[in-house]
Amino acid sequence: MTRTRFAPSPTGYLHIGGLRTALYNYLYTKKTDGTFLLRIEDTDRTRLIEGAMEHLIDTIERVGLHYDEGPAKEANHGPYIQSERTDLYRKYADQLIKNGHAYHCFCTPERLTEMREQQAKNKQAPMYDRTCLKLSADEVKAKIDAGIPSVIRQKIPHGRQLSFHDHIRGNVNFNTSTIDDQVLMKSDNFPTYHLANVVDDHHMEISHVIRGEEWLPSTPKHILLYKAFGWDVPEFAHIPLLLNKDKSKLSKRQGDVSVESYLSKGYCPEAIINFIALLGWHPGEGEENEIYTLEELINLFSLKKVHKAGAIFDIEKLDWFNYIWNKKKHNKNLAAIAKEIDSKVIIELNHKKEPVYTFQNLKYEQEFNNKRGELLKKMVDNYLKPEYTQDHDLLLKALVTNEDKILKSSLEINELIHFFYERPHIDPAMVLNEKMKVSKEIAIKGLQKSIDTLKKLKDFEDLKKLQHTLIDLVQKMELKNGQLLWPIRVALTAVQFSPGTFEMLWALGKDESIKRIKSTIEALQNS
Ligand code: GLU
Image (cartoon, rainbow, N blue to C red; front, side):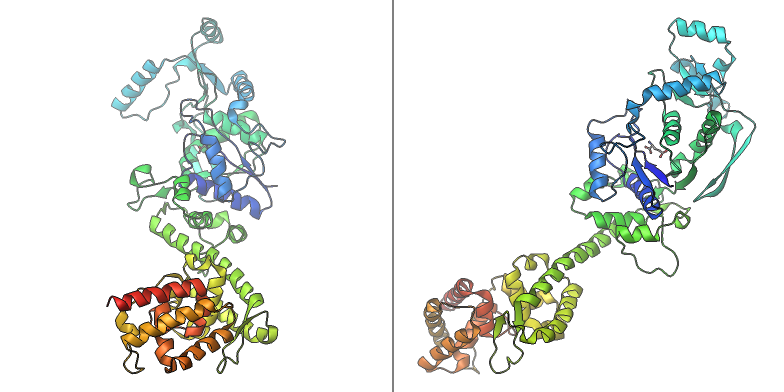
């Protein structure tokens, strides 16, 4: 049974690299039906930041990496916050001393600094010189009794070759003589990361330790601790570093690395997860697709496919993922709208003679359904502006009145329907039309009369009535159809090609239509 953990220290925001570690743990665990833990490693009391743990939990939950066990999700292996487990670490530190795997060290910070400076001068690697290992049991006791502060150091058995298998790096070998006697318990009685990490991974029954490559040099120390306790060693996978574009280690200095800040800038969680998953992992050759949901990532993930080399963090790529994901999510809205078109608006296909848009007319449902698919595809391909989808009713009308154009024209969908949403800027010259014999005078008169007539019309939803009313007006004014209908259509759309005058009146409704006609009259009068 796989059990993994994400074990952040609450020292600030959640770093992009930290989220990737959490994600790879999560993907591996869910793929193998295991349990994913969150453990808070807060034993370095000097680096704690108030509220950091809460932010961290909030962030990983927001991006959908729900943990199975951890703070506020207590199970059999808690508490999951290390500062609440300090008795356990002390017990195991004492056990190590008793069995000869650790020793007290009373060296002062000044002495250690001097020692390191000397080692640097001699071009030696910095390493504790084991001065306190030479103390007898009585000397140690006397110092402790005298209240001299001490730390507990791991006694590394030198002169051994230590090798282990890493899921990503393959076989890794260390010579134990190069390993420093690590501090396990500090003088403040808190354990260091190394001791607490091993004790907890054992007690929490962690089967796979998946973490950043920066912890690789610590792994032999940990393995020696497992062996000293007589515990099974978990499996290891060390994830490659994240790099800036110049291949330096990813840091704050070269840009934003906090997940919270990307979320607050409006990047969507799906895009962040998708982007991060592919930083150092790829599903394999032949897999061209780059857009994956969390569910798909779980299915595809394998530790074997994690790269050994560092991964470049390219923020422009995140922008691209965000664009694609927003589009994808937005299209879900469009799908809902399309469904609504299905049930609400059906176009009468015999509209060549008498265009009639009816609601709840199921006669042509099948036919319209076929077109609906294409219509939707076109909307999706063209990325309909999200603000155009807010007023469903208007969108439906914009779509049904433009159906043919949307399907046939190579113009962007937003170009075809923008005048439904934005009041057009009227160019008086466009209203006038020599060929149709629309003079300024005729245009103004016709528009004024049409306002009076339309104001009286009760039912704007009935396209037939709209049509009859305006044709009546044309006849009463002894005009040709175009002399009245052209100025109205320009007033409503300000474009050469658009749905017809009646459809536009129907779609925009009474108030909006009258407003547009009024401002066209003003524009003509002022020209
Ligand atoms: N607390 C360590 C960190 O902040 C955890 C390292 C590990 O996973 O072992 O990265």
